[in-house]
Length: 395
Image 1: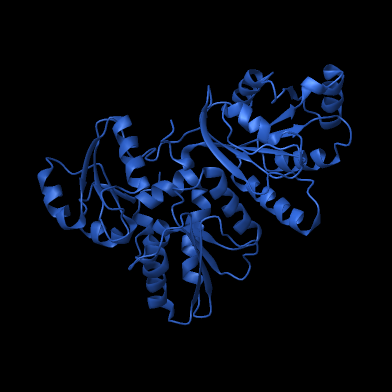
Image 2: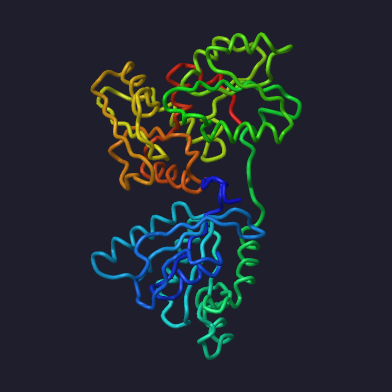
């Protein structure tokens, strides 16, 4: 479980005022000293991530945050960082240590419910409380949610909290990457060019996840590069049911694919499980509305050091400029660096988001929609630019 990618972990964010024991609770849940604990309010300044397995939830990412009642100019910056955690939270723990003055808790619970983030309320420090049941009743009446009583100090109630997390989380809604495109017994050909961007001696995450998905389905998986595509096709007794390619060579592979084979890309598959496919396809078609004066945002999930022929920084901008001229402008934002205001852009082209969990990618899509900016991803954008979007198989 410790090798499970961060993007496949359920992200559980811990929110609350300063000194209610959020960091102590994180340590109690993980059984490790994962976060610094101090009686001084405001010890946690930046979000702290801790990967672990919580049975029966499975692989999780716990996120400790600064108190949302922090004050002053520095406190406001901390509050902003805490609020940004909402973008990636699959679940939330709302922690408190008393029943009086729950005004901030009310506001945060309202926001969590607006974003449809499953939330568990936690009453911490019950080892020092005089009347726990009365406090629980008062919180339930005020917030409309009954808290789980715990003591992070002596680990009281931690197992009950884990069970409540599992109950609120519900079933894992994992969706197959190749849903509707590949079936047991199908032969699937993966075309995987190893360019300078590919990690030496390893495959990139979308390729690994796709291979695993196909093997779990009982498919017959064959891999090749672009230069061996003809030989690979000729070696098969019958055409593959599905060909999955790197988006950068969409056109080359499309020209050679057998008539009966479906064609898609790793990036398109990622879009289907990470985001809203209908919105992303509409965003790809918005490429046709760009002008020489347009500004485009290229958004990358990872923060790799760019190399020559980078798909997002060089190849896609070159393809768009070939159509609209060199005056079209591009901005690059990588990792968690993402503008709050998007209205200066005519289009957002996002990577496949293999390094993000679904919640974070969806939050970016929603933000773009709210500001009226079309958004798409690398694979769909390339397919549109090469005139084959309508011929690409969509999960």
